[in-house]
Length: 152
Length: 152
Length: 152
Length: 152
Image 1 (cartoon, each protein chain N blue to C red):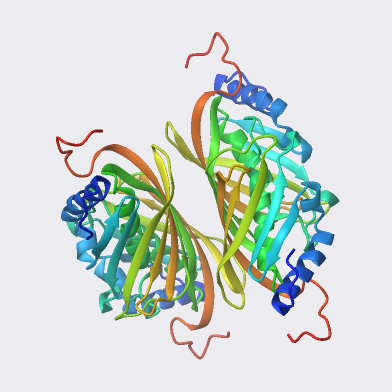
Image 2: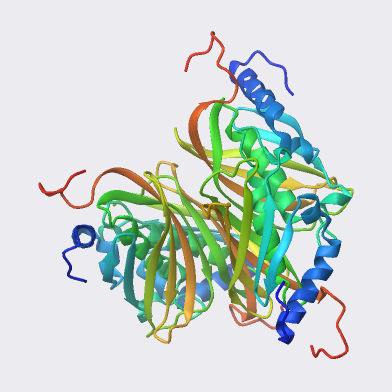
């Protein structure tokens, strides 16, 4: 992760660390949060043989899970607890066993309560695997405990 | 699964068995295909602690994976290889560790190449967890090898 | 519209009348609210030659407009001002000049702030033209002025 | 429209002209195709008082209609007859009477039969009103009659 003196960047990294420590699902699927910042995140996942479905390609639900995880780290990057209200995905190309997938989440729009995020999943050749759009909903609570120096 | 003399029902069950034998992802996530028939399917999944995300609820990607699996067994029930083109999900309530989830997929519409399916995910108390709509796309090939008695 | 002594039904009808009086777009498109009640509505629209697009069928935006209008009357039927946050539509069959379309909106789920509605558009032969799903968002204010006998 | 010697650009403009001549719905709503090229289009619409709904803002169906029209001109720009299979819209801010709206459609992905397009609707101050994503489906036929110099 980037190491800067920007408080918003530091907050995003702190929230991501706190969330990942509790995120057993992301760890079970071998995901790694490679970058995070205010309103954006990048998450990596290797397609292993256990992820293959009945058509010999990566299960679409696991491609969705990768995109949804990048979405979660992006929309929680302000350290306000935020969950997915809805998501939609278009599958452009299959992912196969051995592929190294990258999901990049970008914020499109955000109000106090709601947000929209666009997530692109690509493989190791830069080919697009899926496009995902997520709608976030802020709930009460912080992701990481608030530090004394931070104002609400 | 139901045991009938209806050829369409038998074909759906045969396709489901062939697909599940190759579906490592569904098995890794502990899913079970509890019912299948022409254009519909029911799939079960227990939420285990490894499925929990950074907000202490079941990862939305795994709820999607369950719904997407029911969708897959429903849209492949005619034994024509069919994949997901797109899916959208609305998350209504969180699923928690220990919950027993059921996804029921129903066909809304189907042409030769495309189909629309509605999937409802509920928990053991019958509460709705998520609503999923999937668009299928038929590709070439059969799910299970064609038997000599079947006509195209 | 139905004429009953049910206060919820009466409120839905009162909200619909107040909304329709201001709804110049629905009237410009010749729509008629044929039924309304708590969480549901039915709206009719005739496809006239001015609604035809470059492919000689009814413009998809006008089919969406009909569905969106049924959605609006359903989600405002509690007399709490409510707007569309998002909508998605699947086009199943074309509508043609002269067709009489009916949109039926049903509530799928509702919390204090958000709701999900399913709208089906059919033609005069009962054929499905489109399926629409809408997400509503409650804003402040009432649709029709509150009457003294009503409690918040 | 741009005036170039690029055959793809010329084809896009010819298809747009042929389509607009038949597109009574777009003309009824006062739309203007301000730019078109291979895989993209820009369409303008003024919000007039007849477009206002029961909440005193532009009817969401008409915002959708504008976005859907830009989508249609973008996906028909190769002169292959192409229709909308599905569309989803997120409403970010209301449009009001007097607003001058612009919809810009960009191609995200295209195969021989299907395509995905992203459409952004903004007002005269550059504020985003809505984000639309459309899935196209190619049908048989050409938009404008094929000219002798063109190859399939």
